[in-house]
Image (tube, rainbow, N blue to C red; front, side, top):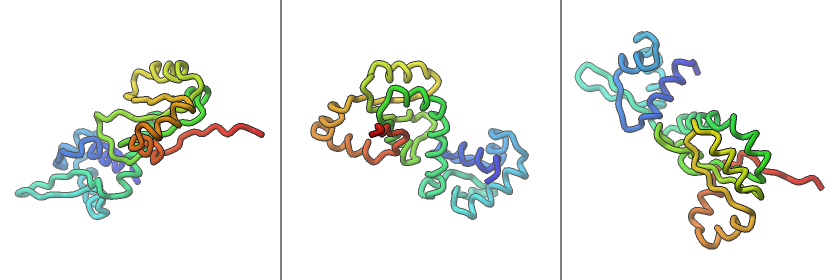
Amino acid sequence: MTKIAQKIIKLLADHPMQEFYGQEIADKIKCSKASASNILGKLAEEKIILKVTKGHMGFYRINYGNIDVKKIRIESALERIKPLLPRLEKVSQKIILFGSASRGEQTVGSDIDLFILSKEKAEAGLVIKKNIGLKIKAVIKTAGEWSELEVREPEFYQEIKNGIVLYSYVPRI
């Protein structure tokens, strides 16, 4: 997939309720109208984006039902938090991406939900706070609190369990 195609998908995925016309997309991603038009046509053929014709103009929006779009959105969330993970791993036993970002359903305003299992809750919280540029909502629990969560909030517990495990410490025996 070309860089321009990736930029188009990111733009449309970040604004799922909005439709854009070709020239508008070209302007926003800083490419020629011809390049944008060509790639938009291919993406529409592949059903990654949806095209609606109104009069003589084509309007485009993301096709959130497409599995490739969801994969791209998940990869986007992972790229955003990648620099944070090495520091977080030092004070964590397990890190799980959950919520909309783990399903590839986040939008431009969504925060990234992370579950962090840690013996050092304050330290893990500090690592998160130092990353001001990222909108991260961290749920930090000890092993005991994690066990209690299954009983007290089974739906939330299951949401976390359905997430993507980013790190899991396995002690050497």
